[in-house]
Amino acid sequence: MRFQNTIEIDAPVERVWALTSDVESWPAVTPTMTKVDRLDNGPFRATSTARVKQPGQRAKVWTVTAFDPDHSFTWEARLLGTQMTASHTVAANGSGASNTLVLDVTGPGSGLVGRLVGRQISKALATENASFKRAAEA
Image (cartoon, rainbow, N blue to C red; front, side):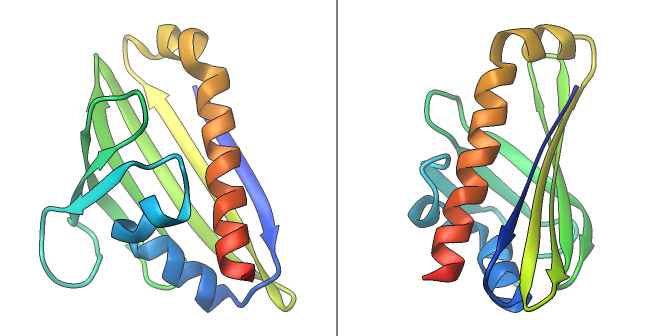
C-alpha cells in the first residue's frame, strides 16, 4: 500500500531540506513524532539509523537506504510482518519548494495495516507536511 502527501512551501529549498534532514529536531516541528534518537554519529547519510517514537506506537528503528544530499532520503523499518519504506523528497518549485512524503507498506501484513490504520497514516503524513510548511515559512 502506498500513502503520499505533497505540499508547496513558500521557503527556499535549502531551508526545507535543513528541516527534513535534521531528523532529531522533528519532535519540535511536528506532533507526529514524540522522540527521534540518532543511533549513529556524523552527518545524516545512507546507512544512518534512528529510533523513532510516534504517538500511540512502539519505537521503531529506521535505517537510511538511499540518500541524495539536499534533495531526498529513503529509510526503512519493519513492523509486524511488514516492511515500511518512507521517502522524503524536497524539490525546488519557483522561489519555494515542493515537499513530498511517501510511505510504502509491503509484506504479508500490509493489506491489514492499510485497512486498520490507512486513514491515520494519510492524516499523519498531511500533518507532518503541514508542520514542515509552518516551520519553514516562519
